[in-house]
Each structure stands twice: as structure tokens, then as C-alpha cells.
Image 1 (cartoon, rainbow, N blue to C red):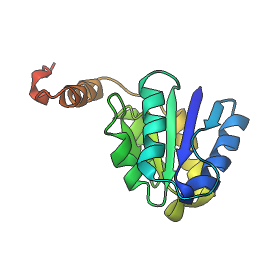
Image 2: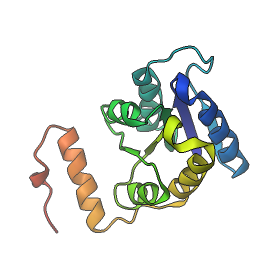
Image 3: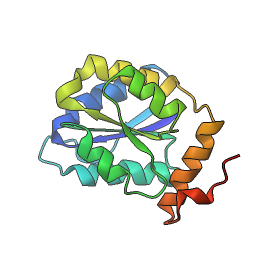
Image 4: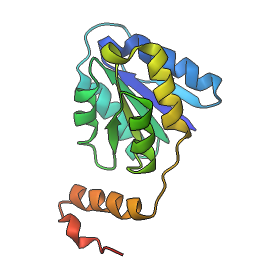
Length: 155
């Protein structure tokens, strides 16, 4: 799977660690954006990853900032992005199985590299369940298009 990763300055080390980790698992993982360690505004990094994923340049993305919250908010502004903040393995699993999240957001300050790797492993290995969840994800798409989610039939 092709994965793009980016971070603000607080997540640079976690981003590099995750890229290496995902590569050892057989994925193509690339860190994009400014990796110099200089201050980086999280919306810039979030846009790079969310835009790449939503336009098909990567299968999934990972974003890291101090809390992960700013990245998640910014990434979800990009059409076609379903970013989820996960601080534990269960949240990561459900974000994929129920919400079909295509971007994972992590906290560099609260998670650490060991837990970040575990969260990422679960997120990468979990498939979308579809079924009743597909209808709900379709409703997210309707909202994204400016339509009421009730326009998706409850079948």
C-alpha cells in the first residue's frame, strides 16, 4: 500500500519512525513536506497529505502534530478526505472498519513512538466493513457535497 506521511515540527521524529516502520512491513511510505525541524503550520502538512490521498496519489495518509487535533480538523476540510484522530488501537480499528478513514491523525506529544506504531499497525490492517456503515459513509459524502444526509436512502 502507498502511504504518505507528514507532520508539523512537533511530529517530525514520529513521522520518520512510522515511515521506516511501515516500509519494513512492506508498504511504500513516504514523508512529504518540511522535515527540517523548523516550525511548520499544521494546516500546510495536513493539506499535503489529504490532497494527495483524495486525488489518488496515495492509498492512505498519516498526519502527526502535537495533539493530532489540528491535523484532523484541517485534513477533513479537503474534499474526499476522511481523517480520524486515534489515541489507541480500538479507535484506529473503528475508524477504518466503521468510518473508512483514509487519513490517520496522531498526537506526537501524547502517544509516543511505540504506541503510534501499534495504532498505525491496527489502522493499516483493518478493512472497511461496509454494510450499514457504507450508508453512513455515503451520508458523509452528501454532507461534503452540501446536501442533507437524509438524501441517502435507509436501505
